[in-house]
Structures are given as C-alpha cells and as structure tokens.
Length: 277
Image 1 (cartoon, rainbow, N blue to C red):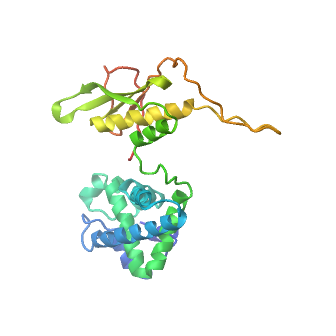
Image 2: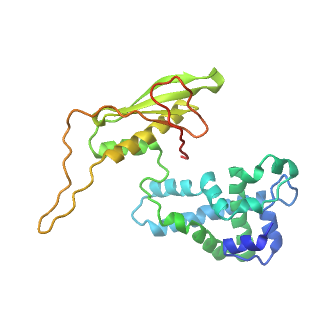
Image 3: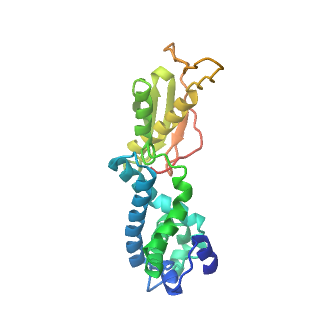
C-alpha cells in the first residue's frame, strides 16, 4: 500500500498518518476501523456538496438541489470517486473479506471515501476537507445537468414527450421468466406516434420499465430533427415536424443491470446494460 501516492491523488498530506490508516481500515481488519470516520465524513460531504450546488446553480429550486445532491453522494458516485483515487489498492481488509473480493465492493470503497473526508476534517479542519471535496467533484460539477441528474428514465421520457406534445408511452409486460421468488420481467415500451417499440428486462416490473424507457428515450432523441443552420440575412426557424404515418416500429431491447433477458420473449435480444438510478 503506497499511502504517499494516495495522498498525492487526494491533494492532501496528513499531519497524523494514523488517521489516514484508520480511514482505510475496514471493520473486518480490526480496530480501530473507519466506521466512525465514515459517519462523520458523510455529514461533512453532504454539507459541502450542498454548498457547492447552492453556489453553482443559483436558479435551481430546493427540490431540484436536493435531488442532485442525493445523486452526487450516493454509493455509485462515491465508488467512482474511489476508483479515480485507486482506493482498492490501499484498503486494509480482513483475510476473508479480501479473498471474497471486498476491495472491489462498491459499498466498501464508497464508505472509505466518506471516512477519508472525516479523517481530513479531523486532521486539517473544515476548509481543507471542503477544498479536497471540491477538487474531487470538479469534473462532475463541470458537466452536471441539474435538470436531469437523478431523474429516472421514465420521468425523463415523459418530460421529453410532453415537451413535444407527443402522447405518453404505453408499458406492457410481455413475458416473465423464472420461479415466483426469482422472476425476471420483459416490458415493452411503445410510442405509436414515433413508431418506437422497444423491450426492456429486469428483476422487477419497475426495473424492466426503466430499462425500456431508457432505450425508448435514446431512440426518440436520435430521431429528433437537426435544427436548420442560420442563413445569411435570413431568420432561420426550427423545422416543423408534421404528423404523418409513423415508420415501421423499431424494436430494440435493453436489460436492467444484473438481470439478463432470457430467450423466448418478443423481439431480438441485444446484449447491454445500463445503470443507477
């Protein structure tokens, strides 16, 4: 474990190396572990992210700010930060946890990120913790869209269609697979006016609907007309889309993460997955 390299990636050098080691120590390794530091770091992280969002998005209301903050501090987001820091190579795990692949487990890596924040706060104070958090999140905040981040695929699809006065999609369960306690579902999402008909799969009806909605949104956005270029001396307007006979339905499939589609359902199968949200 090269703690010097980790401190370089963090952009912070500990006065008390013991705090850094504690932040990297999973409970399976022994005492003192990072659980109390994780508790502290979670609160500091939420406070700093709220402050950064408040400053960056002054026209966003409280509800949207809360939604974006929740998305930025969720386990997957913290795991991705931990991957950038290469935390897996620095974690201190018990033998059993290490053998079972704990250094790759998102929950362990995410908890360690929070523990590091708590350790930096205790070692160097709030301003140092805020600076490190701001630097870790700078690439995310530079590209984040507060209008969509944290919204699920069904909500985004509904908003996209409503904004274009297109009737809402229809979801139908077309197949189920497996025993009652471990069923997977295939759900069709159709948008007749656009000629879109796609299939999503997942371990629950909701997950399958989300998978189908994500693919339907991608198809709808791909079909959107490209705005006309503005000509010299003329005012260019966006082209009008006239309702005509829809094209033949495009049938594609999307599965939820960890829930493979089984053969026998309608339409061709495409290998693929999408995340969380």
